[in-house]
Length: 141
Image 1 (cartoon, rainbow, N blue to C red):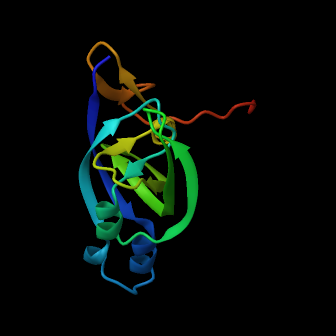
Image 2: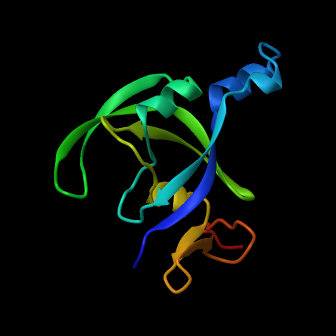
């Protein structure tokens, strides 16, 4: 399978809260629209340090991980970011990897937005059609 890219918008959730409280204007909410590599082998969304700074995201911790080539790295975990693709969104912390040059959208974001990669067309699509769905495991009426 080839590489699949998607245009996503990242938004600082803390800024959204401040705007709702009237502490900042809506146009001051820091956002960025970027091209992301859809990486079904990665769990998390990975961003660059430059993007973290642009969005004004606070670092809340660190996590050890491993890159695709097996290299061990320590990534910075950030506060929550709203990740939007077309009409779908999810709020997650993201990881900043040292030296990262590419934005990756991993399985947590894909699953949370009910998305999958179509291996035939090499594009991101809704797993259950055009409308986002959620699954309630074990819930019965």
